[in-house]
Image 1 (cartoon, rainbow, N blue to C red):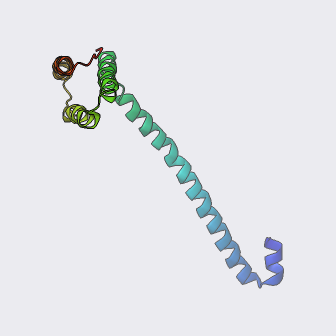
Image 2 (image 1 turned 90 degrees about the horizontal axis):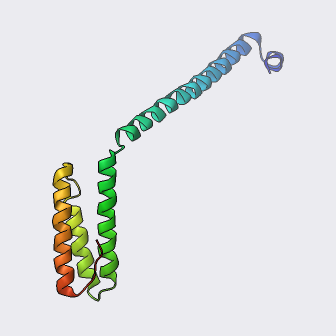
Image 3 (image 1 turned 90 degrees about the vertical axis):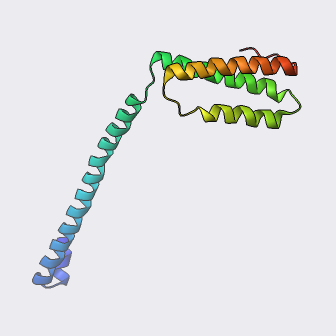
Length: 130
Protein backbone atom coordinates (compact mmCIF):
# COMPACT_ATOMS: atom_id res chain seq x y z
CA UNK A 1 0.00 0.00 0.00
CA UNK A 2 2.88 2.36 0.74
CA UNK A 3 4.34 1.80 -2.73
CA UNK A 4 1.02 2.64 -4.35
CA UNK A 5 0.74 5.85 -2.36
CA UNK A 6 4.20 7.02 -3.33
CA UNK A 7 3.47 6.46 -7.02
CA UNK A 8 0.21 8.41 -6.95
CA UNK A 9 1.12 11.21 -4.55
CA UNK A 10 4.16 13.37 -4.12
CA UNK A 11 6.70 12.07 -1.59
CA UNK A 12 5.84 14.77 0.98
CA UNK A 13 2.11 14.01 0.91
CA UNK A 14 2.78 10.26 0.96
CA UNK A 15 4.76 10.59 4.18
CA UNK A 16 1.89 12.56 5.78
CA UNK A 17 -0.60 9.88 4.75
CA UNK A 18 1.69 7.13 6.06
CA UNK A 19 2.03 8.95 9.39
CA UNK A 20 -1.74 9.38 9.66
CA UNK A 21 -2.28 5.71 8.78
CA UNK A 22 0.26 4.54 11.35
CA UNK A 23 -1.27 6.88 13.96
CA UNK A 24 -4.77 5.56 13.33
CA UNK A 25 -3.47 1.98 13.46
CA UNK A 26 -1.70 2.74 16.72
CA UNK A 27 -4.85 4.30 18.15
CA UNK A 28 -6.92 1.29 17.13
CA UNK A 29 -4.37 -1.07 18.67
CA UNK A 30 -4.18 0.94 21.89
CA UNK A 31 -7.97 1.14 22.17
CA UNK A 32 -8.22 -2.60 21.59
CA UNK A 33 -5.56 -3.28 24.21
CA UNK A 34 -7.22 -0.91 26.69
CA UNK A 35 -10.55 -2.60 26.11
CA UNK A 36 -8.99 -5.99 26.72
CA UNK A 37 -7.18 -4.58 29.76
CA UNK A 38 -10.39 -3.42 31.40
CA UNK A 39 -12.20 -6.67 30.75
CA UNK A 40 -10.11 -8.81 33.15
CA UNK A 41 -10.42 -6.20 35.88
CA UNK A 42 -14.18 -6.21 35.43
CA UNK A 43 -14.10 -9.99 35.66
CA UNK A 44 -12.03 -9.79 38.82
CA UNK A 45 -14.43 -7.25 40.32
CA UNK A 46 -17.42 -9.43 39.46
CA UNK A 47 -15.70 -12.47 40.96
CA UNK A 48 -14.81 -10.55 44.11
CA UNK A 49 -18.38 -9.33 44.51
CA UNK A 50 -19.79 -12.80 44.01
CA UNK A 51 -17.37 -14.22 46.58
CA UNK A 52 -18.37 -11.58 49.12
CA UNK A 53 -22.06 -12.33 48.55
CA UNK A 54 -21.80 -16.06 49.32
CA UNK A 55 -23.93 -16.76 52.41
CA UNK A 56 -22.76 -18.93 55.27
CA UNK A 57 -24.18 -22.42 55.63
CA UNK A 58 -26.55 -21.29 58.36
CA UNK A 59 -27.75 -18.37 56.22
CA UNK A 60 -28.20 -20.64 53.20
CA UNK A 61 -30.25 -23.16 55.17
CA UNK A 62 -32.37 -20.37 56.62
CA UNK A 63 -33.07 -18.98 53.14
CA UNK A 64 -34.14 -22.45 52.03
CA UNK A 65 -36.48 -22.68 55.02
CA UNK A 66 -38.03 -19.29 54.21
CA UNK A 67 -38.59 -20.33 50.59
CA UNK A 68 -40.14 -23.60 51.72
CA UNK A 69 -42.58 -21.82 54.03
CA UNK A 70 -43.46 -19.20 51.42
CA UNK A 71 -44.10 -21.77 48.71
CA UNK A 72 -46.08 -24.04 51.00
CA UNK A 73 -48.33 -21.16 52.01
CA UNK A 74 -48.86 -20.06 48.41
CA UNK A 75 -49.69 -23.62 47.33
CA UNK A 76 -52.44 -23.80 49.92
CA UNK A 77 -53.72 -20.31 49.16
CA UNK A 78 -54.11 -21.10 45.46
CA UNK A 79 -56.49 -23.87 46.42
CA UNK A 80 -58.64 -21.40 48.38
CA UNK A 81 -61.35 -19.23 46.83
CA UNK A 82 -60.13 -15.87 48.27
CA UNK A 83 -56.65 -16.23 46.95
CA UNK A 84 -55.98 -12.72 45.60
CA UNK A 85 -56.34 -11.04 48.97
CA UNK A 86 -54.48 -13.76 50.82
CA UNK A 87 -51.60 -13.86 48.33
CA UNK A 88 -51.27 -10.08 48.58
CA UNK A 89 -51.24 -10.31 52.37
CA UNK A 90 -48.57 -13.03 52.42
CA UNK A 91 -46.36 -11.25 49.89
CA UNK A 92 -46.62 -7.98 51.80
CA UNK A 93 -45.71 -9.69 55.08
CA UNK A 94 -42.64 -11.29 53.53
CA UNK A 95 -41.61 -8.03 51.82
CA UNK A 96 -41.88 -6.00 55.03
CA UNK A 97 -39.04 -7.95 56.61
CA UNK A 98 -37.01 -8.71 53.48
CA UNK A 99 -34.29 -6.17 54.32
CA UNK A 100 -33.68 -7.43 57.86
CA UNK A 101 -29.99 -8.40 58.24
CA UNK A 102 -29.84 -9.91 61.74
CA UNK A 103 -30.16 -13.67 61.33
CA UNK A 104 -31.48 -14.29 64.85
CA UNK A 105 -34.20 -11.68 64.41
CA UNK A 106 -35.14 -13.15 61.03
CA UNK A 107 -35.40 -16.60 62.60
CA UNK A 108 -37.70 -15.15 65.24
CA UNK A 109 -39.83 -13.49 62.55
CA UNK A 110 -40.06 -16.75 60.60
CA UNK A 111 -41.16 -18.74 63.66
CA UNK A 112 -43.69 -16.04 64.49
CA UNK A 113 -44.98 -16.12 60.92
CA UNK A 114 -45.23 -19.91 60.93
CA UNK A 115 -47.31 -19.82 64.12
CA UNK A 116 -49.57 -17.12 62.63
CA UNK A 117 -49.97 -19.14 59.44
CA UNK A 118 -50.84 -22.23 61.47
CA UNK A 119 -53.50 -20.36 63.45
CA UNK A 120 -54.96 -18.71 60.31
CA UNK A 121 -55.01 -21.99 58.39
CA UNK A 122 -56.76 -23.72 61.29
CA UNK A 123 -59.42 -21.01 61.42
CA UNK A 124 -59.95 -21.22 57.64
CA UNK A 125 -59.91 -25.00 57.56
CA UNK A 126 -56.76 -25.27 55.46
CA UNK A 127 -53.98 -27.80 55.96
CA UNK A 128 -50.55 -26.22 55.60
CA UNK A 129 -47.50 -28.46 56.04
CA UNK A 130 -44.69 -26.30 57.36
